[in-house]
Image (cartoon, rainbow, N blue to C red; front, side, top):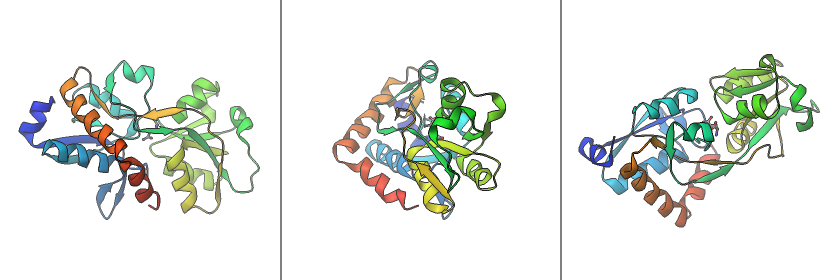
Length: 228
Ligand code: GLN
């Protein structure tokens, strides 16, 4: 929807995958997180409301491409093949993939090409394993969420889980039997995705994002949600 359509509907529809704390998660039956706070600010600036639609991460870019929802906000890393499908806002967070292991297992990041790794399907964690490390299909186990992958790591079905930095920190903070290897495996930037050519909405999103960054709000939102 164009900016005009959003204003007419009185609603911004945010497509996300709410299993990615601190960026989006469910608390007390509500969608919350850094991306939800950002969406609320965009909506406030436009005088409309936010509706959050929860879906699998690997469907978000295609859904935005086909015109579902107003935008995708899900800690989405800007990637060339995604830029073929959607337009991205300015970057609002820098991130990296990180390796989580079972505490005391002695697994190291250099061993990654020879390990069995759990990832969230369709994420840069999967692409890091498959494309950058040429790992075989059966070495890279795909899950709908990183939390499900972490459970299989706890159960001994995986040697490690590769996921974005802050979600990795959040998982390790809640699971004392897991450990984070403090080594950035990739360099990534998050942005909000809109349908190609939707410049009126993209400009509005960029205006709010720039304001939030100038005001130091994004860092505030991250701090607020890291306890979750
Ligand atoms: N940043 C990663 C990606 O874009 C993971 C995002 C997510 O799982 N929500 O692929």
